[in-house]
Amino acid sequence: MNVMLPTILLSARKLIKVLLLTIGSIFSVMIILSFTSLPFWAQYYLGISSEPLKENPEVIVVMGGGGMPSPDGLINCYYGAKAAQKYPNARIIVALPGDTTNFESSIKKMGYELILRGVDSIRIVYENQGTNTRWEALNIKKRFFPNTTPSLLIVSSPSHIYRTVRTFRKVGFKQVASLASFEQANEESLFFDAEELGGLSQIPDVGNHLSLRYKIWTRMHLQINVIREYFAIAYYWMMGWI
Figure 1 (cartoon, rainbow, N blue to C red):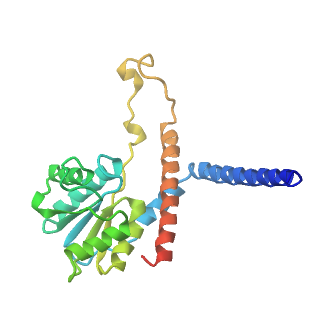
Figure 2: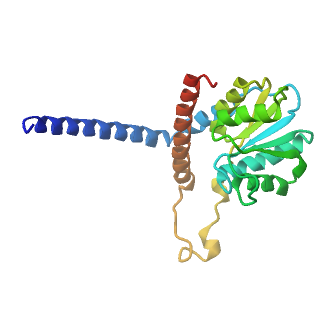
Figure 3: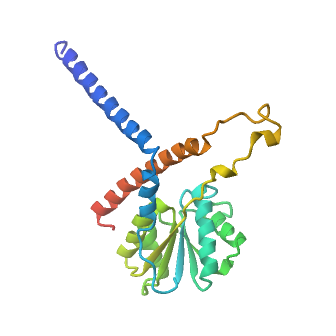
């Protein structure tokens, strides 16, 4: 046993070294990519990967994202309300797990957000049982349209569009389009001059490279979202769900 211990320790050290080198290499590549526009385009093409409908959608499905309040939930409601205004005859389905009898639940708050943005409450129904995209698509088909296949417009985050559209098509919906909830980042020109608020004694100097500074972190975040989504797409493909 004592003879094997050094060998085991040496193997463990080699494994840790390989692991650290791998993590360091991946992180270095992500840092380099953060100085380019590739992360944006990777997310962009996931968000525009569906074909437009030939007619107005009969149903608008607003995906819950991270719930409410959250950036994904709020921006999905914003785009969902815009779509509801454009297509006034479309039914609205909010898809998010939660308790519809609890007025403080995330799914009810999404409904309230849509109502605050001008959507009539009688147009809104809820799919609150599914805990993943596949389950939500199956429930919407079974609960609301067991014998019909209406045209759908899916509102979701850009990286989620590719998988969501194909998941809904797989469960039986033939006409499925999407509206990706792209964020609109602040332009560098919108940042105010610190001197207007009393000078640097009140507002610290953040330098003259605001655009570069904020874009690096934004692109890093985009990479994480895209990589995570590609793993999800691969899993759905292996399971035959898309």
